[in-house]
Image (cartoon, rainbow, N blue to C red; front, side):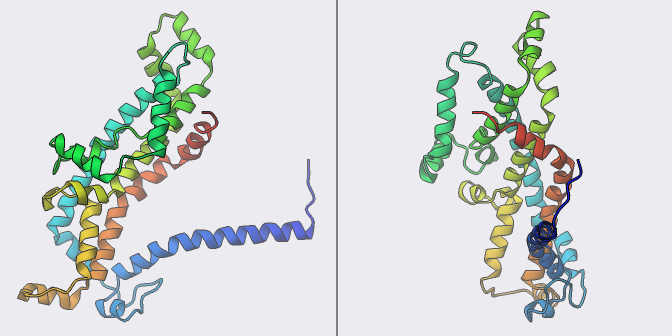
Length: 296
């Protein structure tokens, strides 16, 4: 059926498109601005001359990043955290969501566990009880303090649980008739059909662990164990404080660089994993969120 739009309707559509384009550009502006700063000269940045394009193009900031061993050490800690944390969340999310997707007749305590999970979304024990718990478990200044407190992502569990519940029950019944047990149903039926939701919860877990910085400040004491985002937060705070007793090499380096340009370069480098992984999972994102959010 062909629909004829009036001039006012077409004008309104153009207006909506223009607004959405402006909103999209506004979200890109901070990234473009940081990119321009990272490739600009120290004097141009200090003078506030940099907006969308580099001024007095320079790669000195990235050369400084390459020589910064502490940056790449923190980067490697974040990689370890993401691998371990996402792996634990992935396994726990699948097992919890599969159990909660069963009916109350199959899993009698299902409603009790469901209410416990929902309660944790609405109420938190607070930072001090969490810190005391981590301390009593002797996990302070270890990687486990960063990954175990978030091992059960309730929102991800609910998304995946609802996706499992949306799958046709006939496939479940056919598997049972063929002699499949709960584990076989999970691995051979549910998981292969759940790629959109699995990709969605994996993306949430990856971004959450990669961008987390506050827990590293609270639970870690050793500088060599802090993840990348905690390290970036520390150097940005330190850059606002005056420095004294600088060596000759540091004075020569500061003559060519500024904390703003180097920090901008480090921020951009830290964003690369997100920029790489998101396009790979983006095509599953909308489907996973839509199909996993229509039920309880």
